Amino acid sequence: MKHLRLIALSIFAILCLLLLCKNLCAQKQLDWQGERYYDTGNQTAVAVVPSGGLIIEFHQSEQSASGIWYHIGRLNNPGKQILWSDSHSIDASGDWPAVTVTKEGYVILALTPIGDKTLHYWVGTINPTGSNGQTINWKLTEQVYDSGFHPSLSVNGNGKLVEVHESGSGGKGIYYRVGHLQDPNAGQFNIVWDTGNYGTGYDNGINPHIAINDKNQIIEVHQVRGEKKLHYHRGLLQGNSIVFEKSIRYDDFAEQPAVTLTNDGTVVECDIYDRETYCGTGVLNARDPSVVDWSTSVRIGSYGYPNHFPAVSSNGTLTVSTFDKSATPWTSGSQLYSNFANFK
Image (cartoon, rainbow, N blue to C red):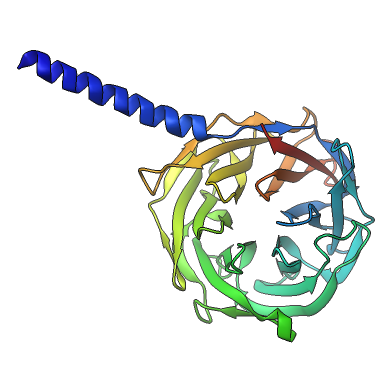
C-alpha cells in the first residue's frame, strides 16, 4: 500500500510539472528591435491596426499649448524600422490621449481637455490597408461621455469597446465602461455605452490600462496611488458588464503600466522601472481565471534620460511600444521614441 501511495504521489507530481511546463512553454517572447526617436512630445498612445499593418500614435505636443497630434506608421519593407508619417494636429488640446482601432479602420480617440476633468471622444476612419501617408477622416469630435481623467481604450474584432479611467472628482476610484459604435455603415459613428450613462467602479488606483481580445477576455493593469506598486485584474466581458477577478499585485518597484492582449491569451505589459522602459510577456493561466503567468521583463530603451508613460499595442504578430524621454535632466521637454517586436 505504501508503494502504491508513493507511485500515486509521483504521478501527481509529474502531472503538475507537465501542466506547469505547458503554461511556461506557452509564453511567447518578443524580439525587440531597438528604440528610435521619431518626434518631440509627451503622453503618447499607440494602436496597431488588426489588419493591414498600420500603426497609429497620438501624443501631446510640448510646443503648442498641449495640442494633440498624431502619426501613422508602417514597417519598411525589410521590417527593420517603423516609417512614421508627418505629424498631424487634431486642432484640440488635451491630456492623456488614448487610442484604439477596429479591424475596419475606425479610429477611436479619448482624452481629457486641458484644465478639465471631463472625458471626450473622437471617431474617425482610415484605410487599414492604405499607406502611412493618409490622414484620419474625422466623423465625430469632442463628444463628452463622462467625468474623469487618464482614459484607456481597447476594441476587439467583434466591435466590443472597453474603457477605463480615473475618477474625475479627486477620489481614488477607477471605473470601466463597455460600448460599441452604433452603426458606422449607416454613418452613425457615435458610441453607444452598453453600461449606461456612468462608469462602473471596480477598484482604487491610478494610471489604469485595459485590453480585450476576440474571446472577450480582458486584462487590466493599474498603479497604487503614491507608490510604485502595480496590480492587475483578469476579467471576462459577459453581456454588457465586465466580470473582474481579484486584484493581484505583480510588481513592487515599477510605475505607469500599459498592457495589450492577443487572441491566444498572450499579455504584453510595459512599465517604468528605475526611470527606464521595460516590457514583458505573460499568458492567461488556463486553470485559474484570475492568474497571469509572467515572464521576465526586458529593458527596451537605451540607458539615458528618464522615461515616462509607455504605451503598447499588438495585433498578435506585430507589437509596438512608444514612450517619451526627458530631453535633458534639467528640462521638462521630452522626446518620443518607438520600439517594435515580433514574437519569437
